[in-house]
Each structure stands twice: as structure tokens, then as C-alpha cells.
Image (cartoon, rainbow, N blue to C red; front, side, top):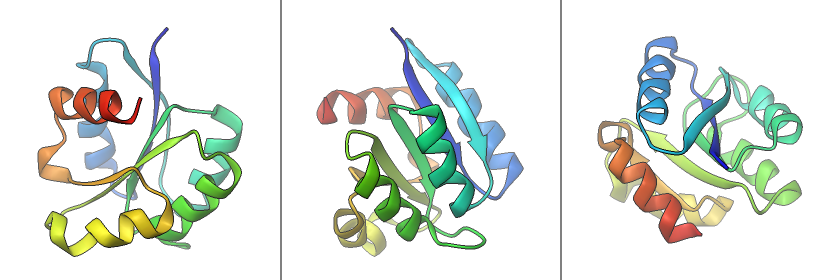
Length: 121
């Protein structure tokens, strides 16, 4: 069974890049894509992904708040917070809102995705 991934980012070029990474990762598939925080909460509820790749800075509610809401209703969903900033800027905030980890966008690779999933499983 494939690991289902929801991609949440307001920038379409990054959603395309993240989709390419997910599709290049063995046994992973894209469950859906959304562009804002509110939509991510709704999509997590309806699509029931295994992983959410969540941008920190989103229109509407932030990725941090969206992660809190997802974690409150579906704590089994692994949320990876992502941004262009370095890890030390968000590592503490990731844990506070229920995210499994913080990953700089530049480090998103099939290997990193598999490693984080394995660590969380």
C-alpha cells in the first residue's frame, strides 16, 4: 500500500516540485494538493493522507495553525512543516504545533521523505 501525501503550499511551482519528489519516491503517491491553510485542514479530513507537506507561510491561517488543527482531529497524520528558512528557526515551533519535524524545502528529496516516514513509523 502506498504512502499518501498531501502537498500544501501557496506557490504552484513548489507544489509541482514537491509532486515530482513524491512521485519519484518508491511506494509514495500524491493524495492531493491545496494552496492555503483552511483548505489543508479540510483536505486532511477528506483525503486522510499519511503525510502532509505543510508550508509554514500560507494565506489565511498559517501552516502552524493548520498543523495544530490537523493534529487535534487526526493525530496519526504525519505533518512535515516546510519553509525556505533554516531548521533552527522552526524546529521548536514544529514540536509545539504537533508536527513530526521541520524540513527546509531545499532538503526535500525522495531519500529524506523515506527517512522521515521510517522514523515516524
